Amino acid sequence: MRDFVSKKVRDIKPSGIRKFFDIASEIEGAISLGVGEPDFDTPWHIREEGIYSLEKGRTYYTSNSGLKELRLEIAKYNKRKYNIDYDGLNECLVTVGGSEAIDLAMRAIIEPGDEIIIVTPCYVSYEPCVILAGGTVKTICLKNENKFKLTKEELEEAITPKSKALIINFPNNPTGAVMKLDDLKEIAEVCIKHDLLVISDEIYADLSYYGEHESIASISNMKERTIVVNGFSKAFSMTGWRLGYALGPKDIIKMMTKIHQFCIMCAPTTSQYAAIEALRNGDNDVVLMRESYDERRRYLLDRLKKMGLPCFTPEGAFYVFPDIRGFGLSSDDFCLKLLEKEKVVVVPGNAFGESGEGFVRISYAYSIDDLRRALDRVERFLNTLKK
Image 1 (spheres, rainbow, N blue to C red):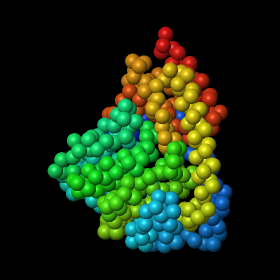
Image 2 (cartoon, rainbow, N blue to C red):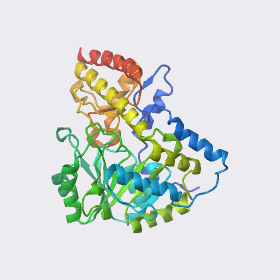
Image 3 (cartoon, rainbow, N blue to C red):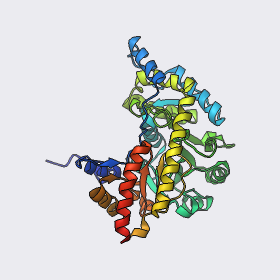
Image 4 (cartoon, rainbow, N blue to C red):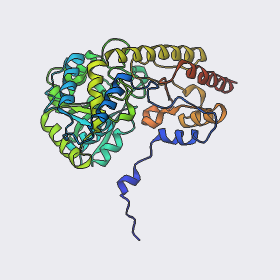
């Protein structure tokens, strides 16, 4: 019998994150600092709205684009928070998480042979989504010494006649790096000069610790060449509700909606009603969670410094990305040995691209008590490496 599996799919590497979760699941007493998932319950008033929608029998399909009321609220939220004017009815698509929005964007814009520029370290889904859509990946390796920011020089060097789009993610997963408006303006100039589309994954936008988040779409002449991806999982602790959205030029959003229409139909109806409540009345919840993450961030950085583990200071998201190169181990070996000896799960940096080699990702989406217990074990492990 012939092999029915697509070579393209077979050749895609499995997620480097899942590898460690699978190993850890078999080790009794393991503590995980690997999951990028808030440890907070979804705020009760948001859950109540979801429950109420079920009680009212709102179990039907919505329009493919999402509830009109939700799309209008998303537009209002982005105007209020990031000062970008969107037409909620024509420039917004509600998706099954931010990940679906990224996939739809790739499939809507890529022609065979198109090059998509990805800056790494980055979220693990970008490269597979480009490949599955028939595109080619061009990688820019961000540097620790540049605070993991993209520079205009790096972007200029990566662009070729085949370049069609740039994917950026700030605040960044896994580094926690942030690009401010002046940084983004330089990137915008290059994108306009070379007629590039930008896919800006801003899922951690509400988790910035040094001032408000700034979007590249807010820069003059960039809204019409930017697809903003966002969602409810990180800011509102709604991971399992599976709800995201894309904002962008109406012609591209229309094509993304067409793909979504055939593959998904619509995002979960209950989640959409809950999301309306989140956008209208969830600002205080976001502030409280962000303050808690900031406390954990500062605690984690202080502990790592005392251990002698160098670490760039993250300004957003809920990850730190310490440099383990001084210990003479690869990222994979460091994580495996830490798991074997101390039963602590962290993620090797190379799971997020080649430029992550020599680093590990630690999530602080955990309580201070959990972090303290895990870091005590990490410190003990590091002491054995120093001998």
